[in-house]
Amino acid sequence: MRKLVYYVGVSLDGRIAGPEGEFDFYPVSDQMSAWINARYPETLPTHIRKLVGLDGVPNKVFDTLVMGRGTYEPALDVPTTSPYSHLRQYVVSSTLTIDDPTVQVETGDPIELVRRLKAEDTGMDIYLCGGGKLAASLLPEIDEIILKSYPVVAGAGIPMFAGRFRPTLFTPTRRESFDNGAQVTWLTRA
Image (tube, rainbow, N blue to C red; front, side):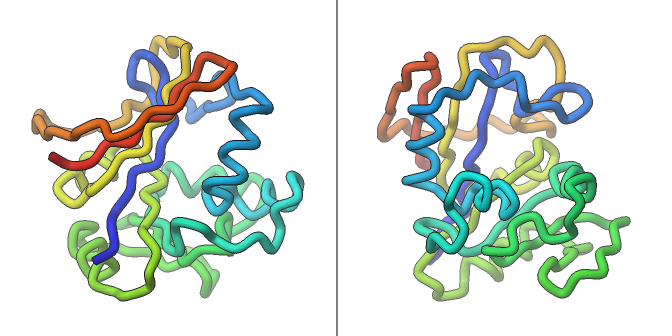
């Protein structure tokens, strides 16, 4: 069965973005960027993939993406309605309408969506792109977290999980460090 993987960058104080959705405060280095491009090229938006020479590079881990409205909406400023055209894209929202056949808006229960996607036999996992509210609602279905921890305090912003108190144990299985002080930790549901 496919896994739902929350692949996410986070500050020392647990923020995935600033109060206005900012994420440019993360200290990304050339070494870490090269690592991300080589290992998880599909996690970069399509317009960025073109800029860094990854256009046409096959997906390595994920073939499907699930995101909330807040994660999706900045794509409209690019402008694009299909920010990850190299993946099957699902946006969970009860109010958004998108006129693009490559992006499916899911107005129902995100748990049911993920369970349907997990039941598919594609050989690749599902990328939970964000945000914090959606991650909290999908916590029972998250099988793995790939946590990019950056050595910066945001002070305020969008939490990694914005939901009710629900302690859930994950076990670290691996960690890599980078020259910018960031670490990537793989955690599996215990």
